[in-house]
Amino acid sequence: QVQLVESGGGSVQAGGSLTLSCAASVYSFSSKCVGWFRQAPGKEREGVAAIYTGPGIQYYSHSVKGRFTISQDNAKKTVHLTMNSLKPEDTAMYYCAADSDYPAISCSGGHFETPAQYKYWGQGTQVTVSS
Image (cartoon, rainbow, N blue to C red; front, side, top):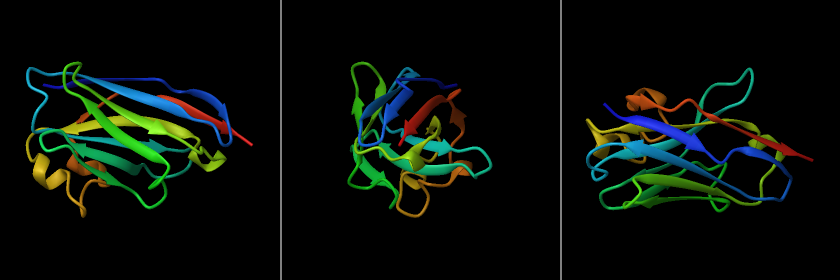
């Protein structure tokens, strides 16, 4: 069982920055695929970034590449999402998700954006970007 707790959401003006954190309650933080998803009202859940915690390989969606950075803190068993140059269209509820069963598959170019690949989910943290 993996429990995920997100933090760091808030309101910011366009062009600003926020860092989200996802703390995982696990015995071992290695060999996990941890992803960040977002969902705006009336829209489908969208995968934005993922990290394979073993080798530290990162994946980004086209919509955030170059603006968002995903990173891991193994000692604190936490994954961060640093969001720069925020736009109003980044406004959404952001969720952290993890897969420990098939992390090499979940954290791959063809799958990291797929919600069904992830078994564990946090409660979400709201990000609001005003113009």
